[in-house]
Length: 402
Ligand SMILES: *Cc1c(COP(=O)(O)O)cnc(C)c1O
Image (cartoon, rainbow, N blue to C red; front, side):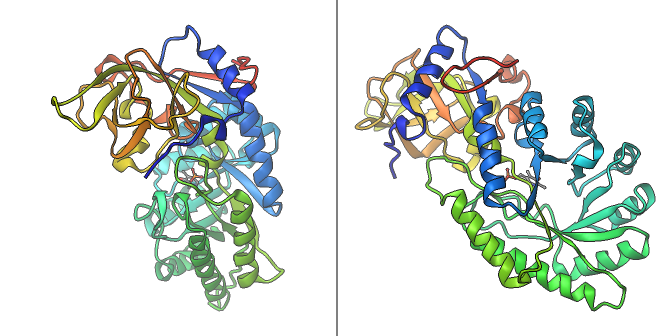
C-alpha cells in the first residue's frame, strides 16, 4: 500500500501552474472542471470504439457546459429522470439524442418522455413493460440484464437488471403489447477493473439474441448497450482504454462475427473523472492520544461535500498537498471531512502518505474528481453550501467558461 506518486504523473508542470494560479485567493472547497480534458476523453473513446454510439450518462457530471460540448461533438445522452430531460431540452438538445435509461420509472414520467419525443427506453421488469406499453406505445425498448459487478470499484449490481430467463419472457411480452423489443443492455459496474466482465455479459446477450430469434415470435434484437464502467485514473492502476476497447471488440467478434449488432456505450466516469480537480484546505491536524501512531488530517471537503464515493474507501482519489510536488517520504495519515457526522471519514484503513509538516491552511488537491462529486454533494448539512464548480477551458490557462 502506497501512493507516493508524483503529482506530475497526473498533470504536467504547466497544468499544475495554471491550477495553482487559479486557486490562489479563492475560498475552498471547490471543484474545477476542464473542458479540454472532457473533449479529449470523448474523442479517445470514439476513436477506440468507432462502431459504438455514445450516450453520455449525464449524472456523472451534468454541468451545462459539459453537456453542450459533448452535444456539439455528436454525443447522445443517457437520461434517468424528467429533470435531466428538461435540462437537455432547455439546452436545445432534441429527444432523438436521448435514451431513457432508468429502469425505475413512474408512469407519468414515461408519459412526459414520450410526449417530448423520446422513443428509446430501458426496462427490466414486467410492471415497467406494461407502463411503457401504455404510455410509450411503439417505442424501442432495450432490456437490462443483471450483472454481478465483481471487481468494480463502484458496483452497480443487484439493483438493476434481470436474469436472462426472465428477460426472455419480458421480450416476448413487450412485443405482444406493441412495443419494439430492440436490444439488450448491461452495466458491468463502474470503474470496472476486470475487462472479462464484458465478456460474460456479451455472451449472455448472444444467448438471448439467439433464444428470441428462435422463439417463433418473429423478434430480432438489433442492439447491445455495453453500459459504462470504463475507467478513469485514480490511485489504483487500471489498463488503458486502448486495452479495454481491443478486448471488448474481440469479445463482440467472438460471439457475433463480423455481423455486429448496433452498439451503444454509456460512459460517465471515463468522460468526466479526470477532468476535475477539487481544491480543499486543511482545517485541522490532530492526534487522538499522546502516542498515536497516525495523525488525523481534517479537510474542508468530505463525504457530504462531494466525496461520497469514499464510502468503504471504494474510490481512492490521488491526493496531494500543494507546494510539495510529491508526497514521497511522508507520514501515514487518516483523512477526514469537516462535518459533525462520524461517518465523514474519507480514508482510515488506507493510509495516505502526506508530508509530516502538514498544517492548518495547507491546500490539498484531490485529483480525478470530475465525476460523481458535485452531484453527490449534500445541501446545507451542517450549513455547508453545495460544492461550487468552476468550468475552465484547460488547465494551463484556467480561463473560466461560465
Ligand atoms: C451511471 C450509469 C452509467 C455510467 O457509468 P460509468 O461507470 O460512470 O461510466 C451508464 N449507464 C447507466 C444506465 C448508468 O446508470
